[in-house]
Length: 240
Length: 105
Image 1 (tube, helix red, strand yellow):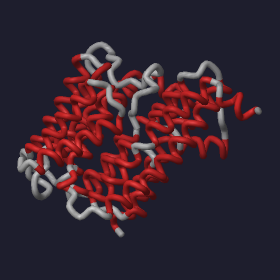
Image 2: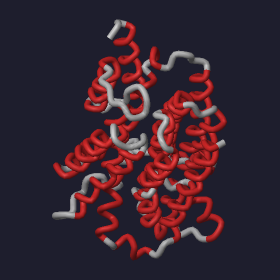
Image 3: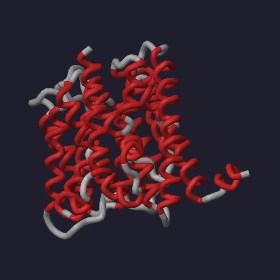
Image 4: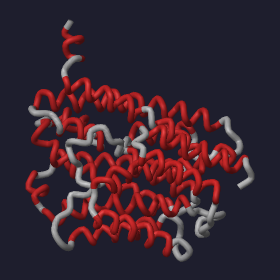
């Protein structure tokens, strides 16, 4: 009976919803990874161990463009650096130490942070974090495998429009930030895109995207903007 | 093999970045410059990735306009404006691109 009453708590309910919804998106990653030339084993390895969507897609994008792997790795790490900020905010709330903290660290991503930070106390925050991590993680790994194996059967990637999957994923990740952000959010995004495009004919693939990170320096000037901040209220958004 | 090394290195780095946040002294979060820059970086990177992948041509360094792909991405924007779920947005982009290509665009 304890399990049923647990299912009714808001912390678990929210976590299950987000875990299922976002976990399914592993299909898109499995597809993009194999289309880029990764083996299904490499795709699943990435989902299990890297386990942070935007970085995974970024690295795979550079691989598919035949770009420099070093630039791809650096770009993925830059994107992964926002998880450090989530960790800073979660540390006091979750209050785990030692082995539990080492395990929990693997689960620090956009969605687990958003759900946990929305909880009123430590107990429900731990419950929400753990549930989202398990459900989302399990689905993400499983759907990555399914997407990868299915894509392996397809010989002509472009006939299925799979070359549009990569940019569409990044659009989906960027959109919630643009919608909430002010003019400066759009300026940073626009400048980032412009820098990358201008540099593409001149620099090895993958490097222009790294260069675009310098557009974020604009955020240091003027009054503080809220755009792109991990807001607790938007737990329904996909921002892995 | 090189790809495996790159994947493993990125996985290790991403884990360390996550762990650093949970284990670091909390006052780092109070540094407004660090916070501002770190929240803005994903904006610039994601926009750059969209632009470069949308306009990718043959070979790594060429840019090219592909009407079918751009049509698919336009449909993805429409789906996002209508607040469609993430996976619906992705499927829409691929389906519209495939459809336009089948029509000969």
